[in-house]
Image (cartoon, rainbow, N blue to C red; front, side, top):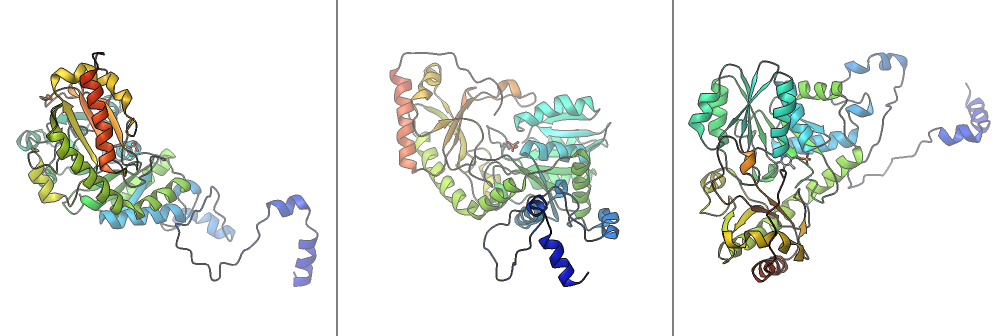
Length: 412
Ligand SMILES: *Cc1c(COP(=O)(O)O)cnc(C)c1O
């Protein structure tokens, strides 16, 4: 068709057609500093042959929106670099990242070893979904290496780790666990959400894959739910990617762009919330209302030596318990908090507190401490203001004679 003819055709277009047809825009000279946002279901192919060959495209190429756009690739690459891995697969939540990895790497008749202090919903998944599929979850004491070694049998396909553990923050010796698991042919996966890849790199210590709940520190603003799995081995990553694709599990490019933006400030946010958290933890440790402060960066914490050896920093998330005589007044007193919100999750800019209990969730290593715990997420407010807010809570608790039975149903 001649240029003239093409122009005539253009001119002849009806408005409906014009409305939906693509216009081309020059990208010349455009080199933005921002994370690109690409939304897509359909990927357009230049010709019939390339459409027919679409599944032969490189794993990082583009086939269909479900399998990712350049925005997904951007976040995957960023996380892969930070974790020092081979490949990152994104999932619609941290929980989905964990469950999809378990399902991709373990088959019916095999065993998964799971720490007793695992993130609560993972225990729930194991007891319901894994059991229904004929996969045997076995819970282990996160700090008893000898007992763990004895549990790794020839049906054990995966040793799951989470360090520090949920709420009670037990530190695990990942290197020792990797040695034991690999000696018996089992994989090691690590939930690294507390540390983030900036403060601990499980793959460097031999873990086979690492999960981050991006919803927490990495996205960092309490406004999205997203997860990642990064593998040390590319083939394993491809296997997981194929598995998620078959299950039809994808993520939103807008969420990925927000997470990638969050990562840009991760280092300064972690540094600040960690410093504020340590200031508050030290203050709480001396406070007359407090029984214990559980924080791996405090020298008196049982896991402190491992934390010091393996981690390069902390975060603002830790737990404290009250002296027994204040517990019954504490529940109602929480309502006087003005700055610190009551809520689960963590890793955002705003401070949070969540009352919880863990005894009913532990099946291997009974929780010996007071069973009414407060998990704090120290955000980016000034720590002195947060201390004043907590002092308001303690005052209400000690002055108020109103007692309420402690209520902390469900896991965090
Ligand atoms: C929050 C959390 C998860 C789950 O992440 P979601 O994105 O909320 O599903 C997994 N592990 C740990 C340690 C978490 O704190």
